Image (cartoon, rainbow, N blue to C red; front, top):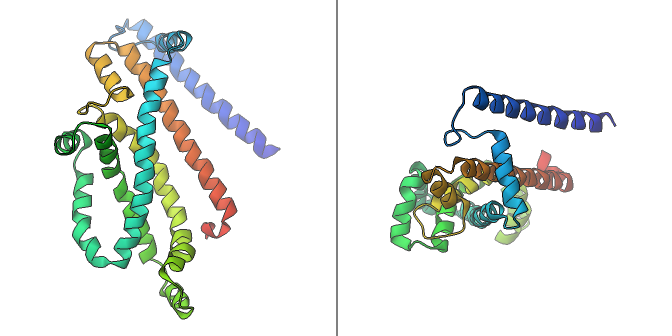
Length: 261
């Protein structure tokens, strides 16, 4: 009961802080007579969102969900492919030596600079956007998986070897349970990274319907209220995505208690 009360109190404190910040924001804009094209009032942003929902079109929500869909696809591919590559790089060090520099370079280049290059090479469609998201989110997964497996005690490998275990059994019963805690931590980081990359990747592409290009066009047309309303939608979706990963983490940790060790 005390734990539940503390949780409720925590939520109330967070909500109160948000309301206080919104009130201060509103008063600053009113007091200094800041133009709406520079910084709209929170009430104007809320009114814009309300009108978008009340119209029945849900334009911003649909655009945000389309960008989130692409981020989720890229995120899923990165986790699956990155895990496989991490295991392969551990098994075949020569492949790690060959491909690691190229994967690292993809992380060093900023998305706005690298995305047009990829688009020019592979096209300006939906598939290119997914590839860009994967390129900028797969590296942490590979590093996490490969380093976790490499840090395992040699005694574990000796034990499986003594039972003449097949490679698939080693992967299933040793590698996957071992990498799970660190992999989930990496996945939590990638929830926001995949959404950010999804938004930026839309700019040089012909992909339509996403929130990234809508924010860019709204900013150029000085529809600042729409830009802020879009940011509110993006923040909401990002928080929900991150929270869902926290719930998945709790479920896995509770089910496979060895992951706590």
